[in-house]
Picture (cartoon, rainbow, N blue to C red):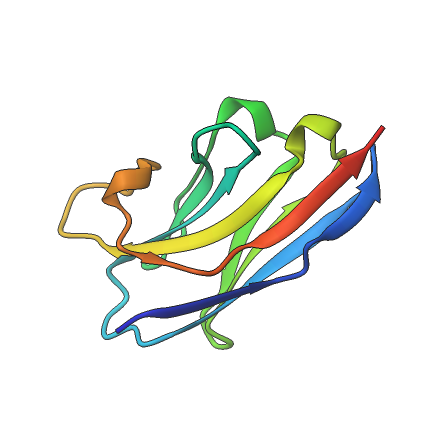
Amino acid sequence: QVHLVESGGGSVQAGGSLRLSCATSGYTSSSYCMGWFRQAPGKEREGVARIDRENGNTYYTDSVKGRFTISQDNAKNTLYLQMNSLKPEDTAMYYCASRRRFGGVCDLAVDSYDYWGQGTQVTVSS
């Protein structure tokens, strides 16, 4: 059973930076997709960035390209999301998530991810 625990959220002013961490455990192989998702009040959960745990391939949603960086430290079993140039519209609960990758490529579809952390709040003020 994969277990995920996020940390690193907080309150910052627009233009600031935060780094989110997700401590992971329970992986039985490297064939997993790992992603960061967020949900703002009154909005649906959306994918932010994802990484293939085996080959490190990354993908970002358009709204965060050039500002956010997803990375992993497999030795520490930790997933990161470095967030720079934060905007008020980045305010949301951020979740890390994971799923097995059965061939093909990783995606950012919320419904395809099986394992979720409890979330960490990010608030960006103008």
